[in-house]
Length: 176
Image (cartoon, rainbow, N blue to C red; front, side, top):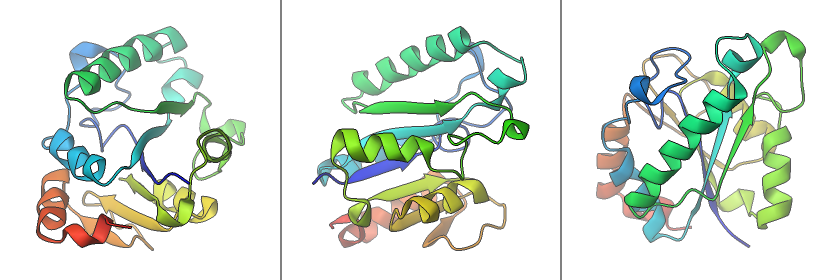
């Protein structure tokens, strides 16, 4: 079985400027590439699981999202960090779909397709819905980032940089 690192996008991979939908507004989070390289060394597959309600709200189109996603994936490839798959929920919250975090629709596809061992996997997010998603999906390990109060995360850091430094000093944590 494979182990995976599931990443939220806005607030984790990139700075959350609010409904980021274009290359011009996309700024990678400081140290995100260094962070991912720590997990890459341990053989993790990378998955992005992101709520993109801006599509459902009409702020940007599915095409805008896909264009930005392809550009982002090329940047990861350039860094030697291939992303296995990007899953997104395009619905507004009031739709109450099965794919919007904290519901587990995005993870169900991943586990079946990529033979993922959720007990050896991690979720990193910046909202309560990300950590709730991990718990609902039975992803064993969680990291919450930012200044929001988030309950039930295994580890909490203010930034990717702080988390990266912690994992560099404590590498056995991700050696599962």
